[in-house]
Length: 99
Length: 221
Image (tube, rainbow over all chains, first blue to last red; front, side, top):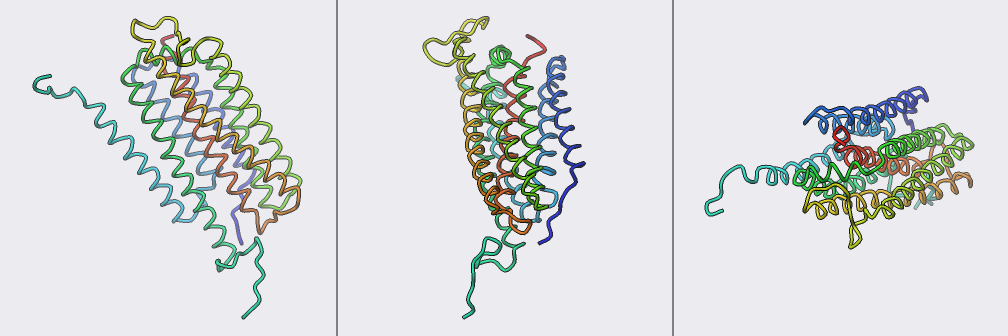
């Protein structure tokens, strides 16, 4: 069996990037960016998630099947969030007769 | 019929060790996808109520200690780093490094849980636990209900995360015991790999929990 062994250097780089991004997300939260505070918070969180998943969880060396399953999982999560929020966010956009 | 001796290296139903390993990895990812959906429902509830009660959620969030939260995030990232080094040690067959990194991972996980317990205790002392004694200072009239909603979500989400951490600690102890008993070799270390996937997943959940719970409206309060 031939497993891909990543170097300690790669892991260390990812590790320090994760720590730097944690500091960044905290610092950004104290700066007033209006509606972009939440955008930045989620952007950094997604970036950290990708670093952990691709490097620490070896997703970049995984089989196509595993990648498809993970992608499918994210798709279902997107359906859960987007479709539900499509309801809650748009409530009140149109007047309801008698209300 | 050929006599077949089943070993952890290759079970009967698999053609090759590689196929067996890939099957285990896939199975673990499928489990993790169900976990994503499980936490996803909570993140959805959080998003809807945060949108509905933006001001109160901001106020309630700012009563959490952001410095402690950030430090604990760093602790968890350190534990993921030691975990990935444990998996690497197993890959290259270094039993000693595997044991050391597993112990470090367990210790860092313990620190995280200890800090979490301290934070929870603080919330109890401040009467920020939903219930009859709940009171949050400075919220507009009618805001105590939504504030309790925030703390209900806070306790549920961090509580479920802590439960996952506890299970993770148990898994790490199991791996440590088997590593000590020389059960893992470079040709068979699947449990270490799978345990690592679980540990990193729990880390990812926290990566989202930290900014969403602690940092909602820091620039305002």
